[in-house]
Image (cartoon, rainbow, N blue to C red; front, side):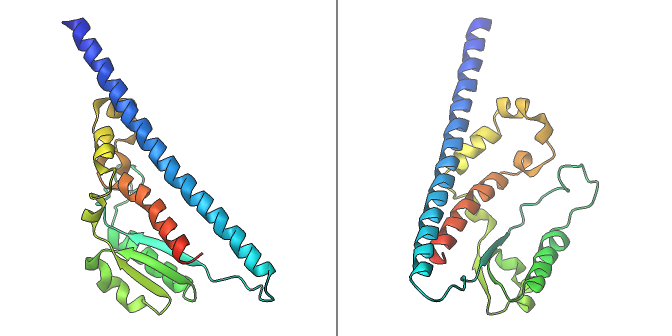
Length: 190
């Protein structure tokens, strides 16, 4: 009975490790694709600049995403500083938009926070509405959740217990989705 239970536990750990490795491979593949695409665009842009008299570089477009993932506290420090989505993220983005008011921005934001940002939106700011629930439709959401909620993951990562990667089902899909949003922006505005 004990030997069978150990075999089953070993199988579950190997399966969870396999899922984790698949997830890592997917993230690395997407990252590599974005990197190669960026290099190709950079080479094309260099060639274009070489063939023209205009050497002024194009504008930069900054990408920001404001989604409330219900973070508990700052950096997993157990409430060393009270966390507030409005003062930490919304106010931070408003300060950034004011500081870089002449730059181009693409901001992904939940509809419910538009009220706070609207007075600061200029012609240089493109708003894309994203809802937190959209992250749950990320193609690898279920695989990520399987790993995040597995006993082996929790047992080997106790130091993560107070940070969003550990307690939020949305943190990892958001981080992984950022790569795709950057790729999309790079394709539209090299």
